[in-house]
Each structure stands twice: as C-alpha cells, then as structure tokens.
Amino acid sequence: MIRTIDQAESAPDLHGGSIATPIRVMESEHDNAGNALEQFRDFTDDYTPPEWACNTFRAMYNGLAELEQNMHQHVHKENNVLFPKALTREAELSQT
Image 1 (spheres, rainbow, N blue to C red):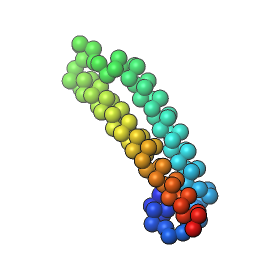
Image 2 (cartoon, rainbow, N blue to C red; image 1 turned 180 degrees about the horizontal axis):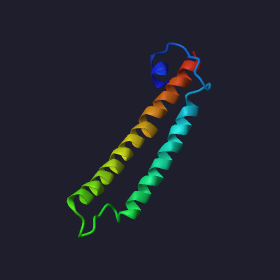
Image 3 (cartoon, rainbow, N blue to C red; image 1 turned 90 degrees about the vertical axis):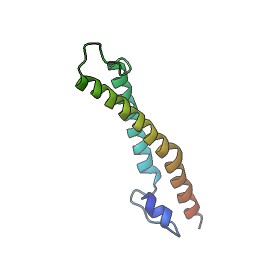
Image 4 (cartoon, rainbow, N blue to C red; image 1 turned 30 degrees about the horizontal axis):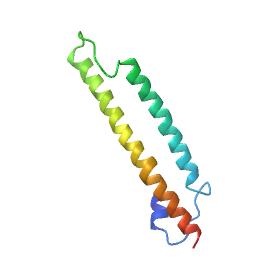
C-alpha cells in the first residue's frame, strides 16, 4: 500500500479506506513485540548467561540480544520514518 501511495499521482482507492488503518495495526504489533522482547530481557538477566552455560546457550543469549537490537531499529525506521512519510503522502494525494 505504501508503494502504491508513493507512486500514485492521485489518491488511490485503498482497501480499508486509508493507510492509517494498517499502520495502526503494525504499530500495535510493534508494541506487542517490544513487550515480548522486554520479557526476554527480564528472563535472561539482560542476556547474561550463567557461568555454567555452554557455548550453545551463550550463542542463544547473544542471538536474543541481537534480535532485540534489530527489532528496535526496525520499529524505529517504520514508526518514525516510513509511516509518517506514508501518512503525509496520502494526505497530499487526498488534496489533489
């Protein structure tokens, strides 16, 4: 839908009426994912493996920490860059 809006010369007929609807859903999903990652961090003592942990266990903790970092970047890019631009573009097209 964002590509459609980005490439359009006039307001496209979008399923659901507006891009704002799926954006709200995705932002809610971002919140849910953030809450799950926060639980991972809590359960793993900030991804600190116990002294007795084997290499596989340590790799899992490192992978979870990397997942959290990547997810934060993903959410930031969508919530603070992509989604606002899409909403602005949709508003511009609706005025033409």
